[in-house]
Length: 146
Image 1: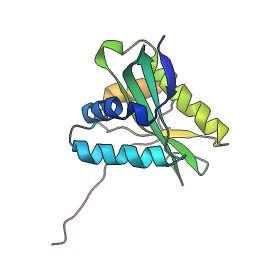
Image 2 (image 1 turned 180 degrees about the horizontal axis):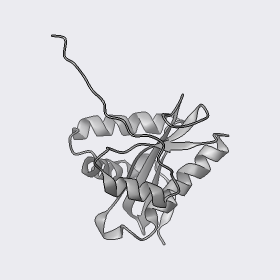
Image 3 (image 1 turned 120 degrees about the vertical axis):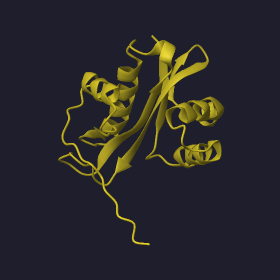
């Protein structure tokens, strides 16, 4: 099994490279700036899964004042999770989510929330396997006024 630990400045390059794989619609500079903000705050941890010295996955979390579908506030929130394709379906997602859950328990938070795009059924199945229960589905709308 891979080693799971909190990510640090030393992991920044590999972490940012994987963030770009998870969120390809964002620029490298934007994703790197977010990492800098996360590293500076105790409320936004990230945990990495390592095979030797190689980062093979990560999970990012935060504390939110409330979480849609949650019953308590504030809540821990799983902001993003990525596992390199060759390492998927080997328990790394569960291990990373447990690291986030342990961090949340240490902070005396009672719930861990998350979200996924309505069409991302792979993520829905993964969340169920990690012990999450679906609480609601929404469709967002907008209307331009200019």
